[in-house]
Length: 211
Image (cartoon, rainbow, N blue to C red; front, top):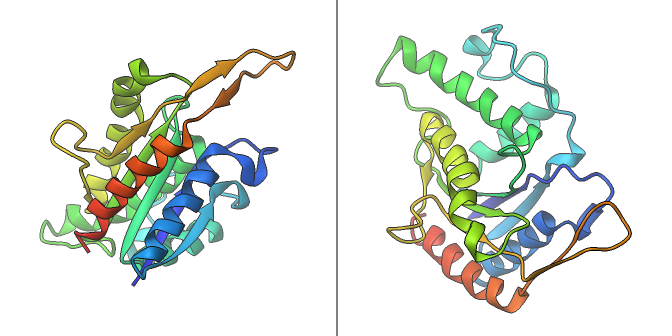
């Protein structure tokens, strides 16, 4: 079995020190413990473009203008499960939005012509992991803006979003431990990685059980 873990961070100069990428690395390690291989897809490495609604994907089921999208899409449809790791932006990072809207368009156009259509991503389990700059008090808003937004798109694409529990039915959200103000214009965020590890272990197990 194999999995894909998508790091949706847009921050160009953080490289593999970004929180999203670090979380992907932990997901990969946890999956490995269950005998599942995992490839991390860092969206910063792909030159994605917005969907322009040309409709040419109806025949090919691929984007005629975006080779990088097609590369990612081919990897996703060949996977046994997917993880989306996204920071809270406005509400989600731009490249993740581009990826989702093109997958939605391919699925919707075929479903519109045939309501029995099953997409190439039909019933693939998907885990959603969000994070942001707030502590526990902010998590419900991250769920609404990040997890639920991604889950709504995945529902159109016919993926199967895996819940964490009844309350967190669209994945999990992870808080910061503290926020420190430095001379730089950006705040410095610290995380309780031990607590994060436990929650990731629990949620990844939930996703694996649905494969």
